[in-house]
Length: 453
Ligand code: HEM
Image (cartoon, rainbow, N blue to C red):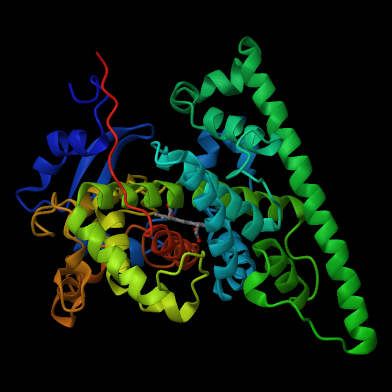
């Protein structure tokens, strides 16, 4: 009934799957697109799953999507969908340095100032926070990803924002997502779908243009360096991910990833990094609006660290390291709302046992992040939003303590997954959230209800 009534995931989960965990079961079966799929929902089972990537390789998700708009958009070879270990390692190695440099805090802060402009211009009228955060993270991923300005916060009707939005909505259209054969075999019946495919082509052409241009600039810089030993003057933190990827490509001695592979990885950053962070930010603001006490505590901390001058500030590393309470709010938001409810499905590469349960070769399996985070056998009062779980020495620390480590306690909180294939954008996203939320705290958040009669 919950599904038919189109109720939120939390309600469906509470009604259907959480009860299956009450007797301490580590996993349950659920029908998915790939057939009956094992959903893992305890830290101990999750730990074994995360650490044994050879036994639980990614399912070839793209094989079921070849010819769909999703496949057209992300392409074949990239870090997220790679199933083959060597293929994945190649991408991760090239993408890694870009994510391990310091993060573009200045960019996060400057784009935040544009957000304030929108809020100020609303003049105390309600603001659609979900939309505004989606605009913010699109501008972040455009500029931090490949130095491209979508200008989405201030001009939501600009050409590339519309193109990207249309593609994004079309890719996850449930009709085509759950019936991919309509896309692969019957697209000719849907004229609008064909137009979406043309938009993907336009978007890709734009990306390839940017990649090619950056390659040329780097090649020239690289040649100049060889001639006059000239040193780079641009701060790594303010370089975009594409430049950092191409630079590490050069330091590896030439083009290891083709333009198509680089483009595919950039598209993955959109799929993996845009809505995920936007939704977390929107959920955090929602949680603060629902609880004035938590909101006030977060605001007092932000003012203590950033000051309450009338002008807009740009938080430094030193500042955001001190945002202890806000960090707890962010972590609790990621637990409570779990913007990624589960990772991409894996399948067992051989007959195996997971916490004593026999799983035959070829079984589809994933960690159900939402239910792991809402499992009453794991968390005290999981349906209460309580940031103090993440205070030093609090519930999360106790879970992760040495005494609980063999039971996978440290994996009880896994919004970014864990192990080798953990989210590479985790720190990037966390810094982005810390900058946005700490500076946005100068406003007071209220819930606004639409009443329909
Ligand atoms: C709140 C924000 C985010 C959440 C909750 C999140 C969550 C996740 C999860 C659960 C995975 C594992 C997926 C799987 O293996 O099936 C993942 C992987 C990944 N994420 Fe994120 N993510 C976030 C933000 C980002 C950002 C900002 C970026 C990039 C700019 C990013 C890039 C990636 C990539 C490239 C992978 C694949 C890593 C690999 O397989 O080696 N994510 N993310």
